[in-house]
Amino acid sequence: MTKADVVSIVAAQTGLTKQETETVVDGFIAAVIETLKAGEHIEIRGFGTFNVRKKNKRLARNPRTGEQVIVKEKFVPTFKISKDFKNAVSEKLKKIK
Image (cartoon, rainbow, N blue to C red; front, side, top):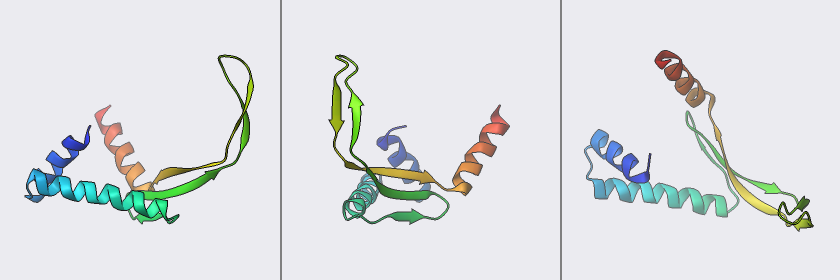
């Protein structure tokens, strides 16, 4: 599924135009990015939590040369699915199979 597919589904369910819906979806994505860049987290009950985690500096190996390389510390965005979301998907898939 692509962003265009999401826009189409939401537009059909809400009665908004596709252009209006795309603006809302883009706004949501921008809000998530800006919030995570500020070091904050986002919790959407029933959906999940967006967070930023620090990955420490570590020693790795270049698979092509075998040479050891130091990977610098970095911050990565993460998403943890809520139990409600996980259970809803699991139950739906059980019924299909």
